[in-house]
Image (cartoon, rainbow, N blue to C red; front, side, top):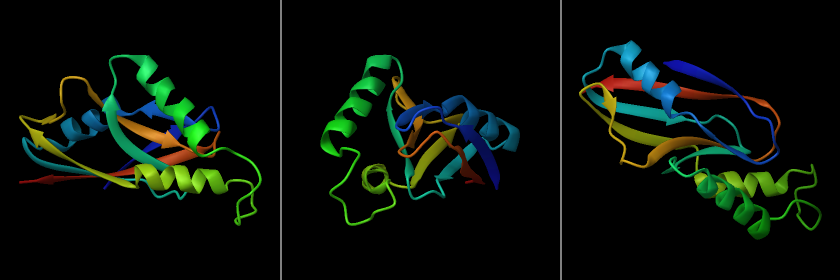
Length: 131
C-alpha cells in the first residue's frame, strides 16, 4: 500500500490529486488492474469530478458552504460538525480501473481530495492491484 500526503490550505477545499495517484500507478508497473483509494479521516473525503474548468471546483465549495453551513445548531459541539456531514456526502473511497498503466478516467475527470476541516496535514491510502 502507498500513501500520499496532502497539506490543505483552507477549511473547505478540493485538491486535485490525479497526478499523484497516476504516478503511483506507474511506479507499481501495473498494466491492467484496479486502483483503490481510501481517505482515513472523518472530516474529509474523495470524489471524481471535472478538472478542466476551475470554476466547477469553486461552485462545489460554494454550494457546500450554503447547504451545510459552519457554526452552531449541531448536536456535535466540537466546532466541526458541518465537516463530518460534508465528508459523508463525498465518501471515503474510490475505485478506478487501470488500462495500459493509466487511470481509466473520462476526458474531463480528475480525482479530488475533499477537505472539510482544514487547514491540516492529511493522507490518502492507495492500493494498486493487478488484474
